[in-house]
Image (cartoon, rainbow, N blue to C red; front, side, top):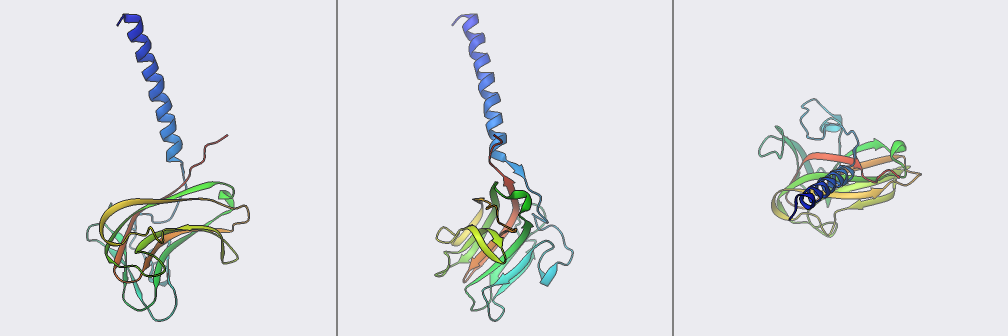
Length: 198
């Protein structure tokens, strides 16, 4: 191969790397600020939940425990553990954000999950992420891991959901649900706007 051909090939490779870097940046998206994404804060939150988060369950007697856990976090010093302790079919940890600046945008919600003995039930197969666009207390668009929820006993793995936010949404909810028996851990939560600028 001649010197000119080699220089041309190197130039093409450099251009390809630059385009790949731009593609990666677009894929990374624009981060959306969320509160306490790694559950590192030890301050008191509402209802005994970590700061910035809410805990809830289907109904009835207390059936899910929500605990900051220092054993085997994915990152930092702690993660959030949900454990089933009663008869209700699911418990969820959620964070609510204002939807106004996100209307019409596509969001990617990602987080790391691990499980121990997550058996699931008719509502979901184990532990799964939830991403809702809400108006007046009801979802106007939503995605959730149900049939594809993480079951059994598993090590840390990253999972994600994407959703286009409707123009009439008032709030965004992100979180993790545990369906039925077992425990699930959540850590290193991220939210980003992922569509490219036109």
